[in-house]
Image (cartoon, rainbow, N blue to C red; front, top):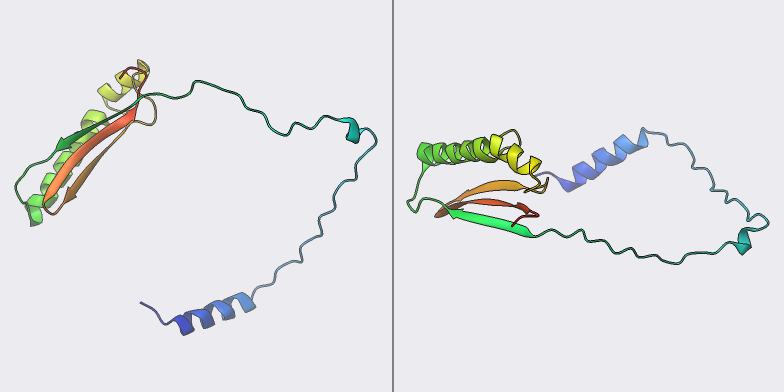
Length: 128
């Protein structure tokens, strides 16, 4: 929390010490002879097949309530396990990436909240 009036005063004092150069006027180049004859393309559309199927897998965590050190330890262990198994330098990740099974959208996450926790693995793939 902070005092709004004091903060505004501090900002005004700070900005008053600064000098800013005057902005230059933008000078637009005049049309040259022949410019009016050029065809203007109002829009262009190119259709490309860029979509890849998406895949997501959720893994439900332990059902019991963890607190304190146990909770922190569990969260760190699961995050470390996910990093080892699916991190960008893991054998599995590199194999899948080199085989074009996954792309750079691949990711994983672990959510640990009071009463529930889960791991999520997702990404785009050409081979669902």
